Image (cartoon, rainbow, N blue to C red; front, side, top):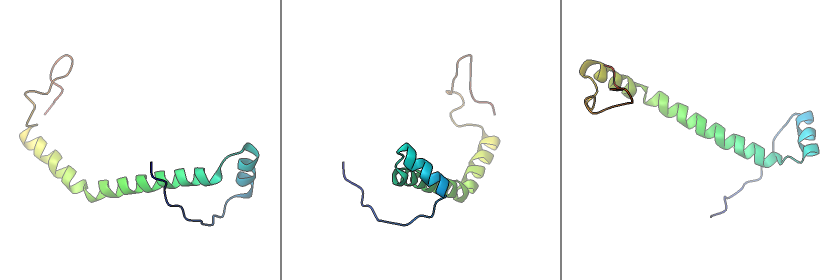
Length: 84
């Protein structure tokens, strides 16, 4: 496993939250890094969904007009899982 390159930075945090974290032995840097990684991933996902929303709409429209191309073989317990 390759160690990630780290960069020192400065954060301004709520005093009570920071003191509470210190009392409980919470690694503030690790928590901040994990939250930042999640926020970046969520933002990238939302950006991608927005950028591709036209494609999703076109695909949905195509399916409504033509049906699912594999509808005859898509199955689920109790019968077909595809409803046109």
